[in-house]
Figure 1 (cartoon, rainbow, N blue to C red):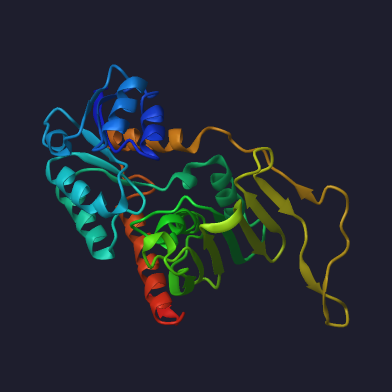
Figure 2: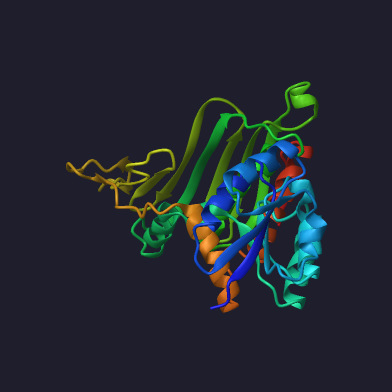
Length: 338
């Protein structure tokens, strides 16, 4: 099998994690790491002495020996770097979000299609054992009919200076929802808060999104950079059982609760109380690092010329929802039809 020669653009917050996992893989070789910051380039050279480090992205994008590029740079640079890379015949793995507008996202999809290239978005969480297990549970209808999803993704920072909290955090939850619900969103409403002089720009640091799907599922997302604690939790409510996914619980990331709401013989609703010990259980979860799984999938998609799970269309779909959420926030939380 041909060795796929890669380069990673960006060695800031996420780039080192990408390089660490990509460097493990057989069938691929990292030829270059690119970053504009001298300190980050020095760190990359120290971490990986055998990989050439440079500040010139254009030289790498134009290099005919490079097969694929990973773009781990700020969101405002995603479209420009990805469009140049695809136009120069490179397969592209890009950090979320794929672009800052759905129009630009669609342009990247078309560029990849026209040049017969793989375009993939790093929606890391859908490659986790926990999320794959949840998808299987829902598909097997263990929860019955899915009614709602409540998600909380909060922490104190890390504050982004070029995007608000929705652009920064929502893609994680939205990509999980798209992957496991398998339904189309029909409307979005959102509200947000921008504390005065917050990080020197009018950026929302806290937001609440409500999404309605065409199969009746209601999803609510709580996103914040302004919380004193860190939480990464999603609750799935079904007609038979409930499921809680807590990313920060290493031993029991997924818990299933055998609880439901039913009618009494008189026709009144009550919480069913016929529960026994062990009605909550935690299935075994594959603990392979999701990021390792994700980069493996990228390389495999290139080798087999098969569309990845988190392809450009998936990335565009997330951006469409975020655009609607921003529109709603700018209009006092009005419901935006999709």
